[in-house]
Length: 534
Image (tube, rainbow, N blue to C red; front, side):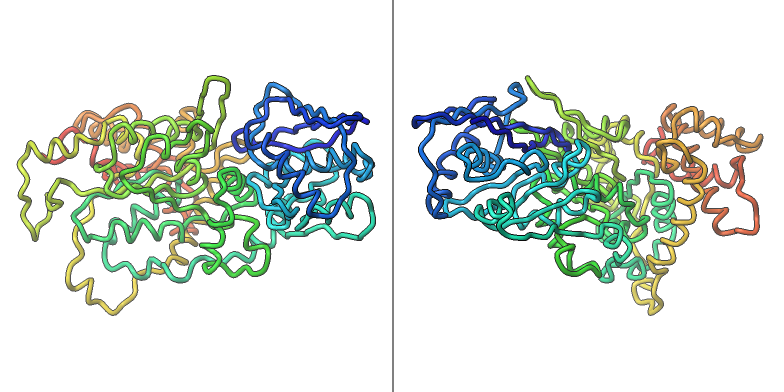
């Protein structure tokens, strides 16, 4: 008897449908073809044990199983349940009428219990896009898959539960998760807020501009000035995630096996409750890898390609503290995802593409001792030492960082001030209004914020008046700025103009960039000036 069951496997952050063809004939043998890896082949032992301990009497048969497409490598234990159901259906212990309507995934323990697997969200999306009625998954993966609207998601704890559902001997109800409701009820973290930051008004302004336009940012200053503290509060002023952003981000964490751990760590920071907590990432990611990170861990890859930190920070913030301490090779691989918004990992027989649209926030000291430019503590480094230290950051990488600002140590009066700083909610309100202006400006395009503007859009939306044109020419010639720096100055100036319109709603939005907008944007390009540090 020939039976078809259906499963899926992840390729990148998407899932590919896998058809499992099971042919049972008299005899006792087991043949599995279709490019399965060791974990898939070992599933035969788990399946036999699970069926036996579950009390199911399955007649001896010779099974020939093909996993199609045959040229796609099948990896992991997620095919256990699919193979088990196929063998049971081939011996008529499971009815086959529902098998063509569901994708089936799950790892079997020796006693028949179902263990959670990676990548259930992209598998659920693949089921919906390919016209399946729904998915059958382990109970612990049910809320993850159920955020996909328009399909039925059934979560089970044991092999016998799946059999009872397919045979219709017991009534089961699908899992429902209101993804839109999860996003609507999300509350920003209450334990970290910009109101805790003392002083640093110029840097706070730079951070606000960066958040409003989606610009990359680097802060350079002495130890203890508050660089890390402010960076960790940037997600509290970014716009809430949209449903499409939340789904795409959750897919990345799902295929990398980090979803449940990540959401559980953040569960105390949200107002959500119940099973929905482990189903969807509703808070923008904030990734802060240590400076000892390897190139592969940062951008993704490996023998079995996995998303790197740049992809785990997708739609959020990638914070690189002590930037100059990172390996030069690790920093250089950031250049392509910063420019393109995605990373392609190519292997001998496989090429996968991971999204990597993130806001890069970096912090570093100005010199090895950390006190160059500090008015209170003298620098003990020689000019050569400072030059070598700054030389660890390449010019092409600095070119891709829109806003570069120097940060001074906090004064005693600011530290002792009893007045709270401006809270994140107030800053976020201005950021949201500025983003609304950009959303309207770029309606009908794939661009969502000023930092993503194409060169054509820069020419269209970043026109200069005569005085601003003259100032930009002088700055380019005086500081030796590059063509890329030219574009990024205009993009930042456009964001400053948008924030200016938010601060003065009674005035029309300036379609032409004025000199005050441009001068502040130029002031934000400090580190790539030819005379910086002299």
